[in-house]
Length: 156
Image 1 (spheres, rainbow, N blue to C red):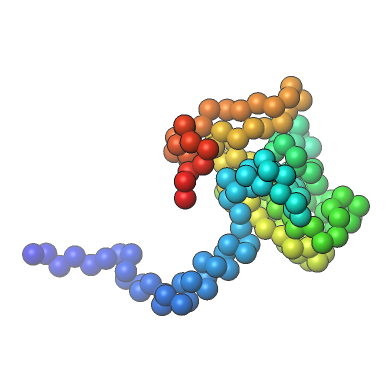
Image 2: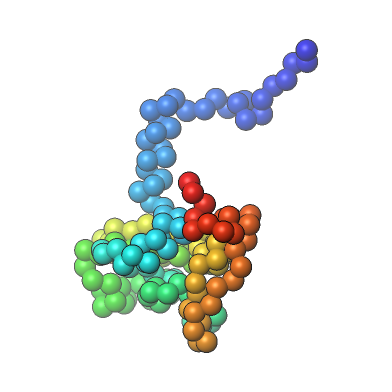
Protein backbone atom coordinates (compact mmCIF):
# COMPACT_ATOMS: atom_id res chain seq x y z
CA UNK A 1 0.00 0.00 0.00
CA UNK A 2 1.37 3.41 -0.92
CA UNK A 3 1.50 6.37 1.40
CA UNK A 4 -1.10 8.73 -0.04
CA UNK A 5 -1.32 12.19 1.51
CA UNK A 6 -4.46 14.24 0.98
CA UNK A 7 -3.90 17.66 -0.49
CA UNK A 8 -7.42 18.66 0.62
CA UNK A 9 -6.82 17.57 4.19
CA UNK A 10 -3.31 19.01 4.44
CA UNK A 11 -5.12 21.93 6.10
CA UNK A 12 -7.60 20.27 8.45
CA UNK A 13 -11.29 21.12 8.09
CA UNK A 14 -12.82 23.49 10.61
CA UNK A 15 -14.54 22.14 13.66
CA UNK A 16 -18.23 21.42 12.94
CA UNK A 17 -19.46 24.38 15.02
CA UNK A 18 -17.08 26.78 13.26
CA UNK A 19 -18.09 25.37 9.87
CA UNK A 20 -21.78 25.76 10.73
CA UNK A 21 -21.23 29.39 11.75
CA UNK A 22 -19.27 30.11 8.57
CA UNK A 23 -21.82 28.59 6.19
CA UNK A 24 -24.77 30.12 8.03
CA UNK A 25 -23.09 33.52 7.75
CA UNK A 26 -22.55 33.06 4.00
CA UNK A 27 -26.27 32.46 3.53
CA UNK A 28 -27.00 35.82 5.18
CA UNK A 29 -24.88 37.55 2.54
CA UNK A 30 -25.68 35.56 -0.61
CA UNK A 31 -28.64 34.26 -2.61
CA UNK A 32 -28.45 32.02 -5.64
CA UNK A 33 -30.18 32.64 -8.96
CA UNK A 34 -32.73 29.85 -8.43
CA UNK A 35 -33.90 31.35 -5.14
CA UNK A 36 -34.06 34.86 -6.60
CA UNK A 37 -36.02 33.51 -9.57
CA UNK A 38 -38.46 31.74 -7.22
CA UNK A 39 -39.05 34.94 -5.25
CA UNK A 40 -39.55 37.03 -8.38
CA UNK A 41 -41.96 34.45 -9.82
CA UNK A 42 -44.09 34.34 -6.67
CA UNK A 43 -43.90 38.09 -6.06
CA UNK A 44 -42.43 37.54 -2.60
CA UNK A 45 -42.74 40.84 -0.73
CA UNK A 46 -40.00 42.84 0.91
CA UNK A 47 -37.18 42.63 -1.60
CA UNK A 48 -35.97 44.51 -4.63
CA UNK A 49 -33.51 43.05 -7.13
CA UNK A 50 -31.01 45.63 -8.37
CA UNK A 51 -28.98 45.37 -11.58
CA UNK A 52 -25.82 47.34 -10.87
CA UNK A 53 -24.41 47.19 -14.41
CA UNK A 54 -24.15 50.08 -16.85
CA UNK A 55 -26.75 51.18 -19.38
CA UNK A 56 -25.39 49.12 -22.29
CA UNK A 57 -25.44 45.93 -20.22
CA UNK A 58 -28.96 46.66 -18.96
CA UNK A 59 -30.16 47.16 -22.53
CA UNK A 60 -28.55 43.90 -23.61
CA UNK A 61 -30.80 42.10 -21.14
CA UNK A 62 -31.77 42.07 -17.47
CA UNK A 63 -33.84 40.15 -14.97
CA UNK A 64 -37.58 40.80 -15.32
CA UNK A 65 -38.64 42.91 -12.37
CA UNK A 66 -35.14 44.17 -11.63
CA UNK A 67 -34.43 47.83 -10.94
CA UNK A 68 -31.58 49.41 -12.86
CA UNK A 69 -29.27 51.30 -10.52
CA UNK A 70 -25.62 51.34 -11.60
CA UNK A 71 -23.17 51.13 -8.72
CA UNK A 72 -21.90 54.68 -9.28
CA UNK A 73 -25.44 56.02 -8.78
CA UNK A 74 -26.45 54.06 -5.67
CA UNK A 75 -25.33 56.61 -3.07
CA UNK A 76 -27.15 59.45 -4.84
CA UNK A 77 -30.34 57.65 -5.95
CA UNK A 78 -31.03 54.67 -3.67
CA UNK A 79 -33.40 56.55 -1.37
CA UNK A 80 -35.60 57.66 -4.30
CA UNK A 81 -35.64 54.21 -5.95
CA UNK A 82 -35.63 51.70 -3.06
CA UNK A 83 -38.18 52.13 -0.26
CA UNK A 84 -36.75 52.20 3.27
CA UNK A 85 -36.88 48.83 5.01
CA UNK A 86 -36.72 46.91 1.75
CA UNK A 87 -34.12 44.17 1.43
CA UNK A 88 -31.95 44.49 -1.66
CA UNK A 89 -30.47 41.75 -3.83
CA UNK A 90 -27.68 42.99 -6.10
CA UNK A 91 -26.35 41.42 -9.26
CA UNK A 92 -23.81 42.24 -11.94
CA UNK A 93 -22.33 40.18 -14.80
CA UNK A 94 -21.20 37.01 -13.06
CA UNK A 95 -18.66 35.27 -10.86
CA UNK A 96 -15.74 36.95 -12.61
CA UNK A 97 -17.04 40.41 -11.70
CA UNK A 98 -17.22 41.99 -8.26
CA UNK A 99 -19.66 44.72 -9.30
CA UNK A 100 -22.51 43.16 -7.29
CA UNK A 101 -20.23 43.04 -4.26
CA UNK A 102 -19.40 46.74 -4.62
CA UNK A 103 -23.09 47.53 -5.09
CA UNK A 104 -24.02 45.48 -2.00
CA UNK A 105 -21.41 47.39 -0.01
CA UNK A 106 -22.91 50.70 -1.16
CA UNK A 107 -26.38 49.61 -0.04
CA UNK A 108 -25.11 48.29 3.29
CA UNK A 109 -23.32 51.57 3.98
CA UNK A 110 -26.63 53.34 3.32
CA UNK A 111 -28.33 51.16 5.93
CA UNK A 112 -30.11 48.66 3.67
CA UNK A 113 -30.24 44.94 4.34
CA UNK A 114 -28.60 43.41 1.30
CA UNK A 115 -27.60 40.15 -0.32
CA UNK A 116 -25.54 39.48 -3.41
CA UNK A 117 -26.93 37.15 -6.07
CA UNK A 118 -24.09 34.72 -6.65
CA UNK A 119 -23.54 33.77 -10.27
CA UNK A 120 -24.96 37.09 -11.45
CA UNK A 121 -26.58 37.67 -14.81
CA UNK A 122 -24.40 34.97 -16.40
CA UNK A 123 -25.79 32.16 -14.29
CA UNK A 124 -29.32 33.52 -14.51
CA UNK A 125 -29.07 33.18 -18.28
CA UNK A 126 -27.21 29.86 -18.15
CA UNK A 127 -29.94 28.35 -15.98
CA UNK A 128 -32.48 29.28 -18.65
CA UNK A 129 -34.38 31.92 -16.71
CA UNK A 130 -36.13 34.69 -18.67
CA UNK A 131 -34.36 37.89 -19.61
CA UNK A 132 -36.05 41.13 -20.59
CA UNK A 133 -34.66 42.84 -23.69
CA UNK A 134 -36.01 45.60 -25.89
CA UNK A 135 -37.60 42.79 -27.96
CA UNK A 136 -39.45 41.39 -24.93
CA UNK A 137 -38.80 38.33 -22.80
CA UNK A 138 -36.35 35.76 -24.11
CA UNK A 139 -34.89 32.54 -22.73
CA UNK A 140 -31.73 30.83 -23.77
CA UNK A 141 -31.39 27.07 -23.55
CA UNK A 142 -30.36 25.73 -20.15
CA UNK A 143 -26.64 25.03 -19.87
CA UNK A 144 -26.58 21.47 -18.54
CA UNK A 145 -23.42 22.30 -16.60
CA UNK A 146 -25.45 24.67 -14.40
CA UNK A 147 -28.88 23.06 -14.13
CA UNK A 148 -30.80 20.04 -15.41
CA UNK A 149 -32.42 21.00 -18.73
CA UNK A 150 -35.83 19.52 -17.82
CA UNK A 151 -36.10 20.71 -14.20
CA UNK A 152 -37.15 24.00 -12.61
CA UNK A 153 -34.04 24.11 -10.44
CA UNK A 154 -30.96 22.12 -9.56
CA UNK A 155 -32.86 20.46 -6.74
CA UNK A 156 -30.40 21.41 -4.05
